Figure 1 (cartoon, rainbow, N blue to C red):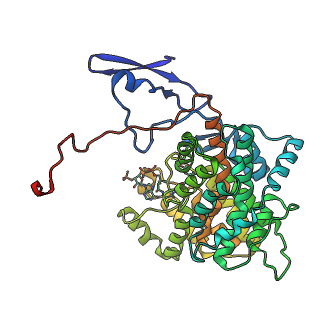
Figure 2 (tube, helix red, strand yellow):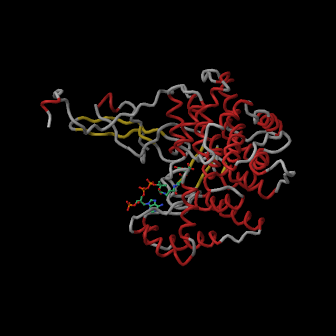
Figure 3 (cartoon, protein in one colour):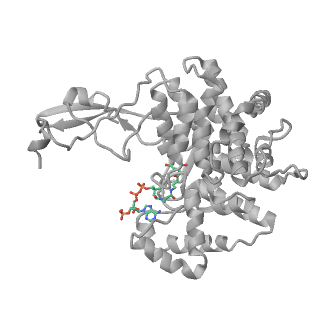
Length: 426
Ligand code: SDX
């Protein structure tokens, strides 16, 4: 196997080393190309670009494989817990019982927020989108936890990572309660991570909150499914922000802002609103025709990497059935979703473009059944993805070859010209 590629430009040849990973595509190392050839590579959507080396998550889009530190997502969703997956993503290995107990205690004892932080929410309108609140609130954490902002100190990096994983549920629950006009609920240390979150979202002072183990398990599994996903748009945002030396609270706030986009994490809200707009199975053919006429996209379908199926979507669909059955809900939108999936998967327009349901297609029905309004769906995605973002940020920071990210461009604007006084224009 050759270990280099040769690029010919004009009468010159340039050797590009081929770097091999433990699995997946090899890469052409173009780091010296501009210096040697005065040419940039051009890849605006990063469709053919590896932005970094990573050991955290591996995706095989054709085979529908998603591994976290080598463990398949369906095994983790079935057998692990979100907090155990957090340890795996952050530290590289599944924890021993003692390691997990220590990690869980660390996270549990960081779940409270500074008392003054609660007044921060009062600055938002009650009808503000919870993602607007999350973007602001998480960015403001650095104003309250300034003792862990020194990114060059490994101990402070670890404390920031634990604080973010621990406080995201408390902040997300406050964003939800605030939008509902309900009082904030303090975390409880005897509850598990997902149980604590559901209690902070749904308990009211007027009565005791009773946990539902099926819903707790479903929430935990949904968090696992959303925990990390290689170098997606929001993770790349976090890495780029972090490459400047920005502290983790600012980087995660940038990731939240990027995730909100409808093509990315905002798709779970859009997908459910699409199902509500379709309304019934009878309306599916007309809606699908609108997709084919390019009037709109089929939200919850398609993926830059998965060109076969999204392994998370299969687990999400199973979780959806379990939750609806547990709650005794016969949601007509589930029938619309299942029929829409069947129609799309048999239509050449979608088959030719390799469009399959992604993680966002069934998550909305599940979350709505659990009692979350659509504007909370992306907040839940951000809550879960925080561990992926901070693990990728940590990995980037610990890479000795780390450099500030500074892409170049293909310039097609005006070439140099002299200033024209206003009386000489027009
Ligand atoms: C997430 O990257 C990640 O890993 C993200 C994520 C994660 O965990 O971090 O997995 C989470 O963001 C999942 C994706 C959620 N987004 C949606 O469900 C929104 C709908 N999907 C599309 O916007 C789209 O599929 C993307 C953005 C997800 C992927 O777009 P690509 O890879 O840039 O593909 P493309 O736009 O080049 O599409 C190729 C063709 C085009 O048609 P042609 O111009 O070639 O004729 O497929 C069409 C597109 O128009 N197409 C769709 C479509 N998605 C792509 N047509 C209709 N409906 C769709 N959903």
